[in-house]
Structure formats: C-alpha cells, structure tokens
Length: 311
Ligand SMILES: Nc1ncnc2c1ncn2[C@@H]1O[C@H](COP(=O)(O)OP(=O)(O)OP(=O)(O)O)[C@@H](O)[C@H]1O
Image (cartoon, rainbow, N blue to C red; front, side):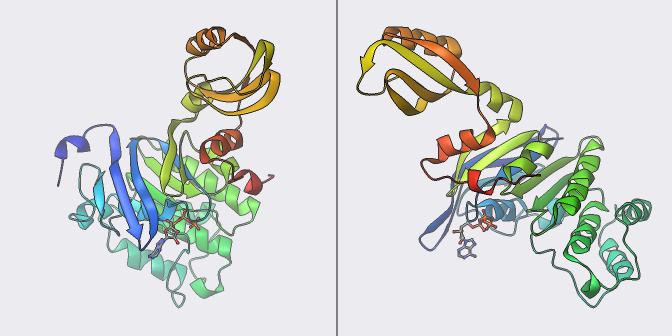
C-alpha cells in the first residue's frame, strides 16, 4: 500500500512489526524501525542477527511475511522502479561482471538512471584512484568496494544502503569507504543505512544505531539518546543484601552484600527514589560503552565485545 503522505515527511524508511522466517529460523522477529531523512543509521549485530534480511526488505528484494515496509512513502515490493531509482545499494559481495572494464561498467549502469551524474562519477573515480581501463577481474577487494560505491552513489540517491561496506577490507581502505559515506551524507538531505558487525565502525560514522540480535531489535535511536539513557549504577545498602534489589529499569545485577551494581535505562530521579525505598543509596553512576550496552541487552553471550576491532 502506498502512503504518499510519508514521502514528504522526515521518515524515509518506515518499518513496522516486520517478521521474516526461513524454515525454523526467525531472521526478523517483529522489527520496527523509523529512519529520519539525513540520518546515518548503523545497523549492528553479529553474524546471522538479521541485518542483510532487513536490508533486503528495504530494497524490496524480500516481501514481508508480516508487517509493513515503506520507503520514501512507497512499498518497495509493489513499486520497485519508483523506489530503486531513488536508492543506492552496495552489497556485501560487491557483485559485478568480471569481464567488463570499470569505464564500461560505469557507462552501462549509468544508462539505467536518468539522474546519473558523469561529473560526479569523474570526481569519485579520481578521489578513489580508480582507472577506467582496469578490468573488474583484476581489481583488489578494496578497489572492487570502491567501484561498488561509485555505482551506488553516481545517481545521487536519496537513500544509500550499504551491506557490510567494509567487509574483508583492510583498515585503511575501510577508512576511505567511511570517508566517502561521510562525504555523501554531507550533501544535504541524503540518508545512509549501513550494516556492520563492528561496533567501532558504527560508532565512528553513524549518528543513529539499531542493535539487532537473533532477529530482534534491541535498541534503535540516536547515539546521544542511548548514551544519556544507559548508565552503570552502584547502590549501597546499610546492611548486607542476599539478593539483588528489585528496581525498575535496572538489569544485569552484579555484586553482593552491601554493594550491588546494575545497568540502568531510565530516569535518574526514579531510580534514586526507588533505591531509597529499597533501603539503599546510589553511590556511583558511570557512562557505558557500546559493548556494555549491547551485552546487557543481548544477555549473557559476549556478542560483539569479542569482535571489537582495535583501530
Ligand atoms: N535465504 C535464506 N534461507 C534460509 N535461511 C536464511 C536465508 N537468509 C538468511 N537466513 C538465515 O536468517 C538469519 C539471518 O541472516 P542474515 O543474513 O540476515 O544475517 P546477518 O546479520 O546479515 O549476518 P551476516 O553478518 O553473517 O551477513 C540467519 O540465521 C541466516 O542463516
């Protein structure tokens, strides 16, 4: 169903209660996500979390089994031309015909897009240090990623969708790709949605984050909101406590006796009042890292902390 009203609003991607099951695997389990125009939205999660499946729905490559997906006010399955003309996409595999030269591939792809800009292509080819004469089959992984990015950007899409843009790339090339993303978004009003399993990468580039785990959305929103919302709090009691206190919005209790520590995701004043009611007092509050927030949500597994990259 089309909802033209959405087209003019600030929500360029509107996903509601999306469910996708492959056999017994729930790849997406009731995911809702709203992406505002101009955002750089990082979708983070371990392998198999559901990131690619979510992006395939944005592109209209998969039809929702339940729920709705609205892109720029349109249904991408019913109106693929109307949506895809306004999207740019870089897949994880960077698929492209090996036998073509870069120049031929650019000319061929450009013929499909009325908004394709040759001047912009020239600029990108130069800044990515690509040679139009080079055959695709001779390119390194990093060069393939750059060509893929030129192809995704050259029609100046309103939304750029990147699936693991830096997968398999060395850190320097990865920074190049990220720099290109940042340049793209600096053009007014463009939106970038990219998936990654690297928390550092998402933190460096994105202003919004969605955390996916086992098909469920653990958190979505801006980094600033998230950092303000989640804190590690330590509560001290006048006498030893055998069990953790029951306080609203506090999870993952650790400690024992006089002092207990938890991750808190709510309003500070409410916690203070609840702690006092429980006979305790908050003695310390600390900001959490992304890893800690993710682990607190995802349960006992160490989902992303183990693959956080040193850069
Ligand atoms: N076509 C398919 N057929 C069967 N199962 C699938 C299919 N596509 C995805 N899955 C399963 O759905 C789950 C989510 O997969 P998805 O590729 O979306 O995860 P991901 O977060 O993108 O992972 P990765 O980081 O490894 O790319 C996985 O368990 C995967 O095996």
